[in-house]
Amino acid sequence: MSWSRVCVVGLTVALAAGAGGWAGASSDALQATLYRYLDRGSVSKNLWAGLLREPSASSKALAVQVLASSANPSSAPLLRELLNDLDPGVRRQALVAAGRIGAAADTLPAIGLKSSTPAVRRAAVWAGCHTGGEAVGPLLALLESERNTAVLETAVANLWRLEGVAW
Image 1 (cartoon, rainbow, N blue to C red):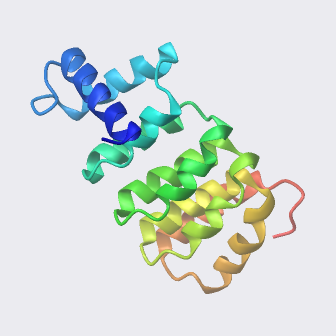
Image 2 (image 1 turned 90 degrees about the vertical axis):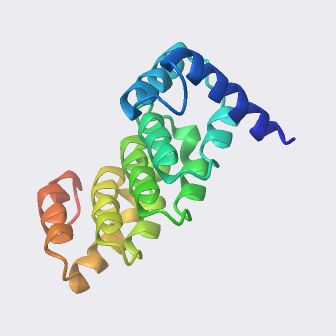
C-alpha cells in the first residue's frame, strides 16, 4: 500500500471518528473536521495529497476548498496537479485556492483560462486578478475572445485588482 493511501486511510478513520462516520456524515461535518485538522496543523502534505487523489469528485472539491483557506504557497504544485482533474468542480476549487495564494501561484490561472467549462474559466479569471504576474497576459487575451457573460462579468468585477496594468 502506498504512503499516500496509508495517509488517506488514516484520515478517513480520523474523520469517521470525528464526524460520526464517513459514509453517514454530511459534507458540512466532513468540512468542519478537515478545518479542525488544518487549524491544528496536523494535516501533512502527504495526507492532503492522498485525500486529493480519492475517486470522489465531491470529496476532492471539498478538500481543495479547505486547503484554499490556508493560502499556503507551498500547495501550488499540488494545485497545478489538480487542474488536470476530470471534474470541473475540483478544477474550479483549485483555481480559487490559487487566487488566495497570490503571486506564488500566478502561473495557474492561465491553465484554467483554457478550459471549455465556463465555471472553470470564471474561477481562472478571479484567480488571475488576484495573483497578477504571469496571469495578466493570458487574462487580457481571454477578454478579446470570451463570449460567456458570467466570465466577462467576473473579469469586469475584478480587473481593478491588477494595479498598474493598462487594461
